[in-house]
Length: 136
Image 1 (cartoon, rainbow, N blue to C red):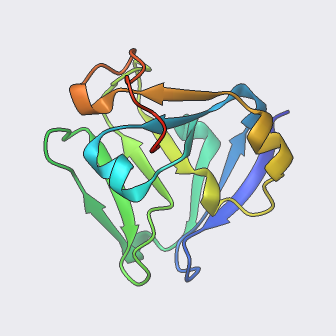
Image 2 (image 1 turned 120 degrees about the vertical axis):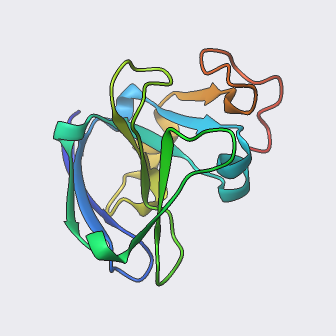
Image 3 (image 1 turned 135 degrees about the vertical axis):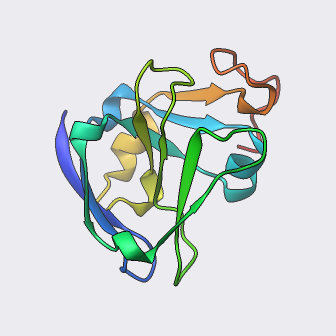
């Protein structure tokens, strides 16, 4: 069910809201940064995402080998609450990956029932499932 969620980084400097339907699924990627950060995300199109506070508190990091992903980190607490992709890897348009663990009031049971899609970002094969996913 589509619901408007609020979310934030750990210190609260970054605040956002997004219209999401968790039951449609979440994703995990095996690229080097997502693996190290253990990102568990849900996608949102630009019109479903609104940054409420902290624009000047964000640091934009572009990882090696994937210059289209803008990893947004809070300058104060270091949490990556979301990232945005400016060139399509999978969707054909800009989209946001929102860290589900940064959403306020997430129903853990709903989250656990939602399907998880695994992406092979490490090999730039976004439509393929990685051979190993246990660590994600």
